[in-house]
Amino acid sequence: MLKSRITIIQRRIIAERAENCCEYCLSQLRFSMQSFSIEHIIPVDKGGNSESGNLALSCQGCNNHKYNKTEGYDPVSRQMVSLYHPRQQNWNAHFVWNEDCTLIIGITPTGRATVNTLHLNREGLVNLRRILYEARKHPPR
Image (tube, rainbow, N blue to C red):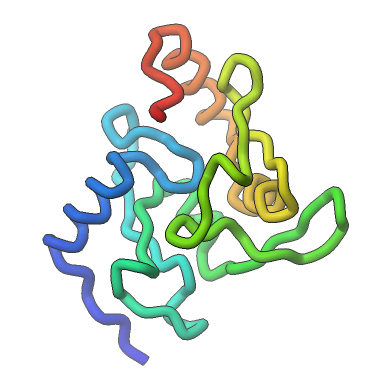
Protein backbone atom coordinates (compact mmCIF):
# COMPACT_ATOMS: atom_id res chain seq x y z
CA MET A 1 0.00 0.00 0.00
CA LEU A 2 1.39 3.39 -0.96
CA LYS A 3 1.34 6.07 1.70
CA SER A 4 -0.61 9.08 0.51
CA ARG A 5 1.42 12.29 0.67
CA ILE A 6 0.77 14.70 3.47
CA THR A 7 0.10 18.11 2.02
CA ILE A 8 1.67 21.39 3.08
CA ILE A 9 -1.75 22.51 4.29
CA GLN A 10 -2.10 19.36 6.42
CA ARG A 11 1.37 19.96 7.89
CA ARG A 12 0.46 23.52 8.86
CA ILE A 13 -2.88 22.49 10.39
CA ILE A 14 -1.30 19.65 12.37
CA ALA A 15 1.51 21.88 13.67
CA GLU A 16 -1.00 24.56 14.70
CA ARG A 17 -3.25 21.99 16.38
CA ALA A 18 -0.21 20.75 18.35
CA GLU A 19 0.80 24.33 19.20
CA ASN A 20 4.17 23.54 17.55
CA CYS A 21 5.00 20.96 20.22
CA CYS A 22 5.77 17.27 19.89
CA GLU A 23 2.54 15.56 20.83
CA TYR A 24 4.41 12.91 22.82
CA CYS A 25 7.24 14.61 24.77
CA LEU A 26 5.90 18.20 24.40
CA SER A 27 9.24 19.47 23.07
CA GLN A 28 8.81 22.86 21.48
CA LEU A 29 9.68 23.18 17.81
CA ARG A 30 11.15 26.66 18.32
CA PHE A 31 13.84 25.24 20.64
CA SER A 32 14.57 22.07 18.68
CA MET A 33 17.86 21.35 16.93
CA GLN A 34 16.04 19.00 14.51
CA SER A 35 12.97 19.31 12.36
CA PHE A 36 9.67 17.77 13.43
CA SER A 37 7.76 15.15 11.45
CA ILE A 38 4.14 14.48 10.76
CA GLU A 39 3.74 11.03 12.25
CA HIS A 40 1.18 8.32 11.54
CA ILE A 41 -0.20 7.35 14.97
CA ILE A 42 -1.40 4.04 13.53
CA PRO A 43 1.30 3.24 10.97
CA VAL A 44 0.28 2.80 7.36
CA ASP A 45 1.68 -0.75 7.42
CA LYS A 46 -0.76 -1.51 10.25
CA GLY A 47 -3.80 -0.07 8.48
CA GLY A 48 -3.38 3.61 9.33
CA ASN A 49 -4.13 6.38 6.87
CA SER A 50 -3.02 9.95 6.24
CA GLU A 51 -6.20 11.58 7.51
CA SER A 52 -5.99 14.25 10.19
CA GLY A 53 -7.27 11.94 12.94
CA ASN A 54 -4.29 9.64 12.46
CA LEU A 55 -1.56 12.27 12.24
CA ALA A 56 0.50 13.88 14.99
CA LEU A 57 3.37 16.33 15.19
CA SER A 58 6.43 14.51 16.48
CA CYS A 59 10.00 15.48 17.27
CA GLN A 60 12.60 13.38 15.49
CA GLY A 61 13.54 11.48 18.66
CA CYS A 62 9.99 10.40 19.47
CA ASN A 63 9.29 9.62 15.82
CA ASN A 64 12.41 7.44 15.56
CA HIS A 65 11.69 5.54 18.77
CA LYS A 66 8.03 5.02 17.90
CA TYR A 67 8.72 3.94 14.30
CA ASN A 68 5.78 1.63 13.57
CA LYS A 69 4.94 0.67 17.15
CA THR A 70 1.43 0.90 18.57
CA GLU A 71 2.13 -0.99 21.78
CA GLY A 72 4.78 -0.92 24.46
CA TYR A 73 5.78 -2.66 27.67
CA ASP A 74 4.41 -1.26 30.93
CA PRO A 75 7.12 -1.89 33.54
CA VAL A 76 4.60 -1.90 36.41
CA SER A 77 1.93 -4.30 35.09
CA ARG A 78 4.52 -6.18 33.00
CA GLN A 79 2.06 -6.23 30.12
CA MET A 80 2.08 -4.98 26.55
CA VAL A 81 -0.38 -2.08 26.30
CA SER A 82 -1.39 0.47 23.69
CA LEU A 83 0.83 3.52 23.35
CA TYR A 84 -0.57 7.01 23.90
CA HIS A 85 -2.81 8.16 21.03
CA PRO A 86 -2.75 11.99 20.78
CA ARG A 87 -6.04 12.21 18.87
CA GLN A 88 -8.04 9.93 21.15
CA GLN A 89 -6.48 10.53 24.57
CA ASN A 90 -5.63 13.49 26.78
CA TRP A 91 -1.92 13.92 27.60
CA ASN A 92 -2.68 14.99 31.18
CA ALA A 93 -4.65 11.79 31.82
CA HIS A 94 -1.53 9.67 31.20
CA PHE A 95 1.44 11.85 32.14
CA VAL A 96 2.59 14.38 34.73
CA TRP A 97 5.78 16.37 35.13
CA ASN A 98 8.10 15.85 38.08
CA GLU A 99 8.63 18.80 40.43
CA ASP A 100 11.07 20.72 38.21
CA CYS A 101 9.35 19.66 34.97
CA THR A 102 12.42 17.85 33.64
CA LEU A 103 10.94 14.34 33.65
CA ILE A 104 7.70 13.02 32.21
CA ILE A 105 6.16 10.46 34.54
CA GLY A 106 3.67 7.94 33.18
CA ILE A 107 0.73 7.57 35.56
CA THR A 108 -1.20 4.90 33.65
CA PRO A 109 -0.10 1.71 31.90
CA THR A 110 -0.34 3.59 28.58
CA GLY A 111 1.66 6.51 29.97
CA ARG A 112 4.39 4.31 31.43
CA ALA A 113 4.66 2.24 28.24
CA THR A 114 4.88 5.41 26.14
CA VAL A 115 7.57 6.96 28.37
CA ASN A 116 9.50 3.69 28.17
CA THR A 117 9.05 2.95 24.46
CA LEU A 118 9.55 6.48 23.10
CA HIS A 119 12.30 7.30 25.62
CA LEU A 120 10.48 10.51 26.59
CA ASN A 121 13.19 11.33 29.14
CA ARG A 122 16.19 11.20 26.81
CA GLU A 123 19.24 12.88 28.34
CA GLY A 124 19.30 15.76 25.84
CA LEU A 125 15.61 16.46 26.39
CA VAL A 126 16.00 16.48 30.15
CA ASN A 127 18.91 18.91 29.89
CA LEU A 128 16.96 21.18 27.55
CA ARG A 129 13.91 21.06 29.79
CA ARG A 130 16.05 22.08 32.77
CA ILE A 131 17.40 25.13 30.94
CA LEU A 132 13.99 26.11 29.56
CA TYR A 133 12.34 25.66 32.96
CA GLU A 134 14.87 27.99 34.56
CA ALA A 135 14.18 30.49 31.74
CA ARG A 136 10.42 30.10 32.40
CA LYS A 137 9.77 28.74 28.90
CA HIS A 138 8.87 25.18 29.96
CA PRO A 139 6.54 23.38 30.22
CA PRO A 140 4.81 24.68 27.11
CA ARG A 141 1.22 24.05 28.26
